[in-house]
Structure formats: structure tokens, C-alpha cells
Length: 271
Image (cartoon, one colour):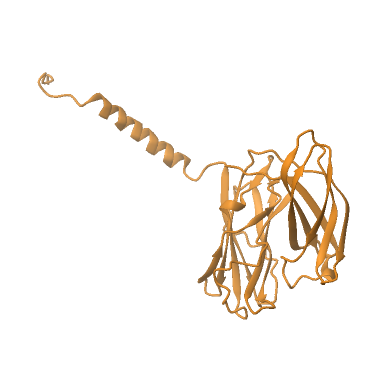
């Protein structure tokens, strides 16, 4: 059949956008769920308010994730001033062949009751360190005793920590500084202190760095993480530090600490 020369043609730009839309949809379907980052949820139950949990439940984590994550510790209790308080630590092991960035700003902790009902959520999470090398272990933790939005939670009930952590392929440098002359002691107020010196062994001045102490028990399990910030560490210089344990769980005492490790890293923010 001959084409009708008087039949109007479809505008060219509409046909172009039609095929662009088709390509976009196909690409979105084929690439759905992929990317440089990987966000996973891991959870851990505690049978008592004063107890801790070392669960390795990672059933909800993607098998293809370049890391292994587990809730390494979860403490909750009514603190000395009568408020609900909790401390959670999530361990992340880099199983990939490249550096990983622990994106604390995009991670969160949820507290649920035994029935899975959300009680409170917290987005003020810290990481130690910001970047971990292949085979290395890092941590997400809440260093200030829980979300202050709801301190009336009944600590006698069974609670569950659900951690939503975001780990990405690092696009920032993994800069660590040598730490020397470290020691742990108990002050007159009964709190632990970790002291030492950090050296900027590079030829670049650093305006801010994180110094964090990881405390372990006799079995190598993480007990707590405590830290401080150092500023204006010029190239080739050293600076001393004194990290107080005032922000750690009340259930962790000095006699439980069998070893500790201090990590000093350049502050890194990945966008």
C-alpha cells in the first residue's frame, strides 16, 4: 500500500526521546541494585538488659557484598541517672581486594522489642576507622549512649539491635599515622584513659585527624571504642593525646580489658 503523502509525520524529537526512554528503562532494569556502595542490615538479640550479644547473624546481608558485617556487642541498661542507655558495635571485615569506606553518615541503628516493633532509631553513628584495607576489620558504633529522643525505654525487656550500615568502595585515601608511647590507666574518678603520641610522618600538614582506642577482652572480642580529635598536626611533628572512656558502656570495666589498639587516621569524608 502506498504511503499517504498528506499523512502528518511524528515529530523527530518525540521519536528520539521515545528511544532514549527505552534505553534508559532497559539499563535501569539490567543494572538495578548495582553500584559502588553496599548497604546491609544486620541484627542481634540480647536476652537481658544487662547482657551483651556477640551474634554473627548476617542472613540479611547480600552474598556479593565485599565485606562481612556482624553485631559484635550490644549493651543496654538503665544508667546511673535513671535513663535508658545503649551501646552498639558492628564489626565490618573487608573481604575485597580494595579499600572500603565506612560511611557513618549514611548508617543507622534501630532498637526493636522482641516483637520487632521499632522503639527508637539513631543516626548519630561513628566509624573506626573511616577507611579499611583488604583483610582489615573496622567498626561502626554509637559513642554517646544512644539516641536522646527516647530515654524512657524499659531496659528490663528483651531488645534487638538492627544495624543498617553503608559500606562503599573507597574513593578517598587511607591515611594512617604512627602511634607511639601508648598506655592505659584508671584515673582518680574511676574512668579509663588511653594516652600516647601521634606523629605526622608525611610532608603535608593535617588540620584534623581522629585518634580512637579499641578495647578488647581476653578472647579478642571488642568491648568498647573511645576516641578524640586532634587538630593542626603539622608535617613531621608529634602531638600527645589523652582519650577518656566517659562515653563507653557502664558495663565495661578496666579489669575486663586485656588488650587495646590505637588507630590514628586522617579525617576522610566521601561524597
